[in-house]
Image (cartoon, rainbow, N blue to C red; front, side, top):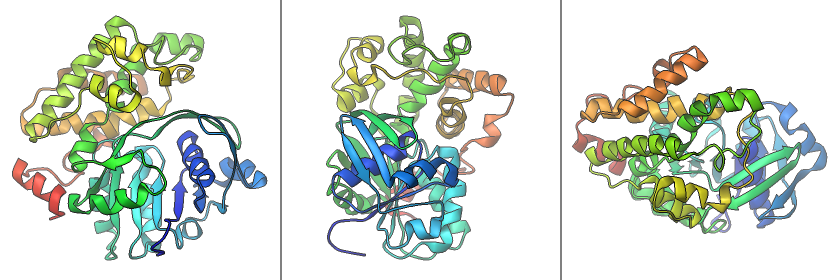
Length: 364
């Protein structure tokens, strides 16, 4: 690997992947873009890059646009994973045979338990190479891909904590990331980044509690600005208290949702409702057109389930979070407890708090 500027592979060509790949390219970095199916990236391949509008503007030429994962990651130092968390496992399984010493896998974001899950997958696959695993607390952009090969970046967040597994390697990955994006800052460890996952609080409940409006209007309303009412905000605040309590049981001081809004967006308010309404970065973002959305399919099994599962193991009640999981099961006619990241799947079942901390700090 070059000791100079890092080279990147962005894995995933959805809203976020296109935003990240194009921004990195416009900043002058060598970027490849991978997507599992070529159909999604065919228009980008034809253009040779992505047109960007919003906070960042221009045409971003990409070095490589491919659905061949071996080709995509070959020679790339930093592998930026930008897919829904339920796709982390199949993606990492696909790249495992081709990983080389010195490569760095960064989940953007990890949701809850992402880095721990990747560690387990690489162990299952017998990968012995020196691969650094890290996760971001949240995604760096508020963005939408409006047409094939065209993306709008509504807002670049101010500060995005990133933590490595093990934690003592965090400065290594953040130092490389900051050469491109200074918004990346060191997180304490992957428990902090996982439990400061504010999407777990904002996405599933907001979607389910707006189910009638989403189905009747096909999402024709501003998701955060109009979808958040004072009553819905009260429910989100209860979920947030439960999340913070689970973190506290692990000895972690987790950000509240209001604190996070201030750090990420400079949005302030006396209540969560006021802070969300005062967030200019949320203006113009529309609701999903159906309930078949990653706000449920991803955030329930990969965010809420692990928080509730940890709560059960640590003796912390999470009744509001469990209520949203239950409603999601009904709406999608499935069992997200079976699909989700439980403590068993994350390799944490039966561990004491001291043992969990040692795992994330030292990798043992």
